[in-house]
Length: 347
Image (tube, rainbow, N blue to C red; front, side, top):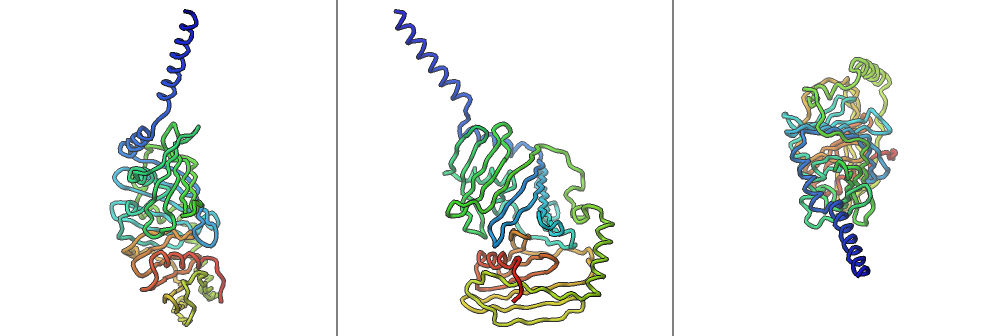
């Protein structure tokens, strides 16, 4: 009798342990429901992260500050870890979507559905949306994180088909994102160092005027003016850069044009697919003006953000304006050519 009682108690105890364990462990459906609640209920967030990109010829690192305010206001500051002057801001407010380069007083206004039109590895809502859209998402739970592996939606880069997203078990906020290529290599890595839900914002935090004059404006203007004066006096030549990736084309013509306040070089490439690369350095003092309007999408080249439309891609790097135009290159090939221009020497 005692032995039967002991077996019964042992069985009940084991069953109780299993029940308690099951109650403590969240299922995939539980976690998705909580993430969806966060997305719907939060008034905004502020986050900081470091992003590493290996999509070009060299690894690029950015310090990112992400602000989101309910009703579709975004401010994403990307600071190049090697050159603060190349820092840029993606801004979305009631007036539209902008990419700002405050140090150069340059701004683009995009006719785009950003950020909904593509996956964004540093935006909380985008990560959650990718999970919700993927009915085949893979889920696992470890000691500290809930991990999802999902499909991505990068319209301009088919070589980044999936991602791994790590969420903190206590807060359900993102900790790390690895964007993978077809061979499961992490080409983009985002590591979050802080994440604050429902913060407060100043009324003008998402205004273009404020974000174009971040920092000590007077000091920056003085330095810019001095640099412009120096450039005008020395008439520094344009350093012509060539792409490593040319889609089978070669330079057939190099045309140099002297401008009133700078110079322009037009490189014509002919071969399997023809294209033109224009590089221009203008020494005119920066003047705050209306942003240049672009119908296309925002693309991160690794060293800078570019504006991609059907037949052209435009960007600025190290004080030089670049325009790549082609009716034969695919959008993905145009990005590859543009990415390969960075850091190359003259021919």
